[in-house]
Structures are given as structure tokens and as C-alpha cells.
Image (cartoon, rainbow, N blue to C red; front, side, top):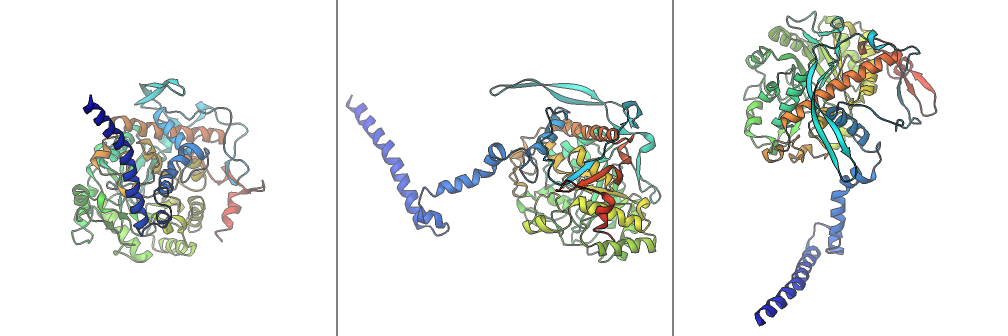
Length: 525
């Protein structure tokens, strides 16, 4: 009995003493350290500031910010994307939560919209996919089940199929849809995410995936999707060990049937300089693909060494097209209209031009960049796009090449506006990431993505089920295409390929509206 009492007393003393000793140890440690001023003045209790600061983004995301407040994407935009991928649905009730008093673009509706049977759409073959159906959804119980369905694909009509490089290449790229995946490299994303995207895009058909500047990987090829192979200033995937361009490696890539086109990346919206990948993401496999050393951070050159002015770039494009026999385009961020004038003038005089131009808005995403570049450099897509389109028309070049647009264009309405402002196609990156599980943790640059998307860490990647997420990617793409045909019908046209500036107006804060041509005139003389 005495032993039990002694043990009990010792236990009680331990319960009291251990917290006191721990408190004293932390107090002394905080008071003595020199790194944090708050902890020196307020030992122990000052730590709560850092705890709240750490969980602040999560508190705002889930509890405090309203549906339209968060950046870079609001909860509304995020949920729309997730729901269209998971349930293949874009339905809502009661009314829009858009703030109609704020300035923005609006699509002009027709008094007599097109009937469904009047739409120029191809609904064959049906696409086998998986969606979820909700059984119960309340505070303490959420139950749903998966169903396999055959979905309408919403392909462009055969007469409307878009062709890239029709008059310049032996092997032009035929595209049955207007929406595809923007550039995302293996290394920036993990192999499971890239594989799920490849499989889902192939499943949807009529679309494409861009490899990003990290080069082609086996995971891009795994699903069978059509591929636009991007070449950045680092030349990853088409370089020799010493960093020089390898024509042999480029020729080998061009012989791969899945690769339909190549894209020279001059700039990216969130980083108008060379790309960056943290060393923690550079695995042996990533290093092998890029022909660099594993474990070391990668910083691409700020521009290509192969050319330094428009004539040299156009000559390089011509050679790439001659060797590869496939379309070659460029990706740029619009800055100075004078530089665009210079480029397009050389195209007009020389008769040389890329097969497409990808315009990335300054609001575009990235796996890693600097705040000063992401926040202030380059023009947003809705400003840059009509400028480029208008200048190409002024120089008589618009019919000779296609325009891809990218920059937070992840819902049908924003895509339709971009098409009306001059785009032929729209690239989406972060919407695709949402479809494979991204929760907007904003830690893409750390290799610690909790959803297993933007990480090469095998332990974190195990969260991502390729077989499940590929259906969400497929559904998201189909849903976007369906939404575009809905908007086209409302605008009185039989296909989204016919969206033009006359279908869009810009509403100012005072309630007045501006035609797009008048709006563009402010930027282009």
C-alpha cells in the first residue's frame, strides 16, 4: 500500500514539476535568444503570435474570407473547378455572388440564342469516365458514391477543327478542342500528378498537355495525350551536358508521335526571367531528364543564348521547323508594345513567323518565383491579349498563326472572354492542379505539397491516386468545353470558335460600358 501511495505522490509531483521545468526552460531559452525580439520581451507567451501567424492562411481560407476574397483564386473559383471535375457539374442556385458594381468584362447575349440542335458540335465518340453522386450531405455526415458514365465530349465540329502549322509544316497539329494544359514541368509536379494529367487529358481527347521547360518525361507520355514540348532557355531535354543545344536530341524528340508541336519559352507571367527549381525537388530522375546534377537547385538563364533579337529568333524557329517537321511557337509576356511592333515588323518583312504565340498574363502561376517578378512585371492577360491580336492584324499576320492565352482562365466564362479578345486556344495550369488534388497550400516551391501534387517526395505523393484523379481531369476539360458551347449559344453563335470582340463589353465602375475596340485604342495606336 505504501508503495502505491509513494508512486501516486511521485506521479502527482511529476505532473506538476514537468510543466514547470519545461516552462522555465522555454522561458530562459526565449529570453536569452537573439533572433526574435518579441520572444525576448515576452518569453513563452510570444510563441502564440508565431503559432497564429503560421495557421493564419488556413484560418482565412476556411473560416474568415468570403467566397470571392481569396487570392490568387477565390473559394468560389476553386470550388467551381473541383465540382466540375468531381461531379461534372456547373449548376448553382438562387443567384450569382459576383459583385456587379465592380468593373469587369461581360458577354453580350443574343435576343434569340441558338437552339441546341443548331450548335456546331461533335458528340461522338462518347467518353467513358467516372463521376460522383451525393447520397447525403449534412453537418455530420457526407456520403457519396462513384458512377461510371458515358459523357458527351463536346468536340468541335469536323468543319471547325483547328489546325496549327497548316501551311508551314509537314506534320501540322489538328485540335478538336479549345482548352488544354498549360506548361507544368515534371520536377515542379511529381510523377503521379503528371501521369494523372496525361491520362485524364488523353481520356478527354481533343486537348493537349504542355511539358513545361523541364523537358519531356516518361510520365508526360504515359497517358497518351497530345503533347506540346516546351523548350526554355535552360534547353532541358534538348541539351548536351555542357548546356549547348543538341540538334540530335531535338531530332529524336521530334520523331515521337505524341509530340505535336514545340514551344520556345521566352518568358512566363510569374517570372519573366529564367526558371527556378529548388534542389530538394531535383531527384536523380529529374536530373537525368534535364541533364544536370541531382540535389542542386536549377536556375535557367534569363534568355536563350541561341538568339538575342527577332531576326535571329525567327531563323532559329525556321531551323527547328525544318528539322522537326512540326509546328514551332513562342511563349511570351507582353510588356512594351514597341517590342511587339519590332517583332511583327520583322515577321512581315522576312515572311518568317512562328506557328503560334502563347501569351502568358502577369497573373500566371509558377512553381517558384520571386515576389517582385510575380507581382509587378508584365501585362495581365486581358490587357496583353487584345494588344497582340490587334497588332498582328495590323501587320497582316493574324491569319498565319494561332494565339494561345493563359493566366487564371479556369472557368468557361473567362475562357470565352479570352477567345473574344483574340485567343484561339486557352492554356490552364492551376485549374488542372485543382483537378488532381491541389488545395492551394501555396508551398509549391518547398517540395512539401500536402496533397502530393507539387512535390517529388514519394511519401507525400502517395496521397494522389492516379486512377481516381485522371477522371477528374477528364471531367474538368469536358465541363469547360460544354460551358463554352452554352455561352456560345447564349451569344447567338453556333460554336465558341466564333467569339469575337463584338460579343464582349467592359463595364466601368460608374456603370458605363466600353466597346472592346475603344478599350484597345487606349493601348494600341
